Length: 201
Picture 1 (cartoon, rainbow, N blue to C red):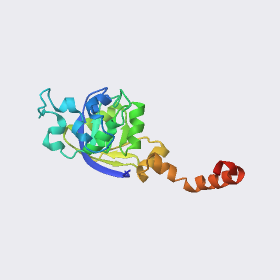
Picture 2: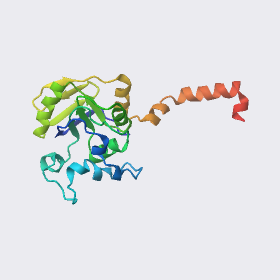
Picture 3: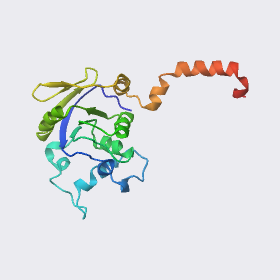
Picture 4: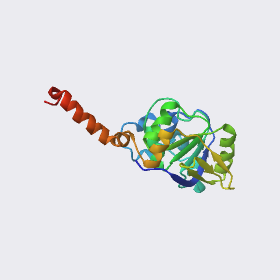
């Protein structure tokens, strides 16, 4: 998993509440277990009409948001089903940070499992960052310092669980976290083999 300690990127606004995982990536795109190529289905029903024509007025189709890597959204982002394809699709598009006033729990944890930083901020701060995003403003996120810096130089602090912070800064998924304890695991296996040799037979 790619680490995220500092990030600077164009922000894109999606000022809607209760964006569920089916809106993020509809069910017809869930047939694959590959994590690449899913950007094709990201926000599909908002990006295309029933005939498959691109909706040019959708935010991510506008030229100023090309390459946007920070998404500023409404409250309760990622609600609905627990599909992990939702963060996969966001990451495949290029988003590394999602900012909202609240997230669904499973989606929130899935983001950390896949190298996306979900930041829950007070609604008043999200409103200010939404203004920046409406102008395709570049936001700077410092995970170590736990700050977001706006284009005008103002900054907000954010809370982040120390364990989740460690994961992001070091690029650790669940397997990576386990491998951090390789010495302890080896010591346990050696002790267990000595005390219970029949288990190793």
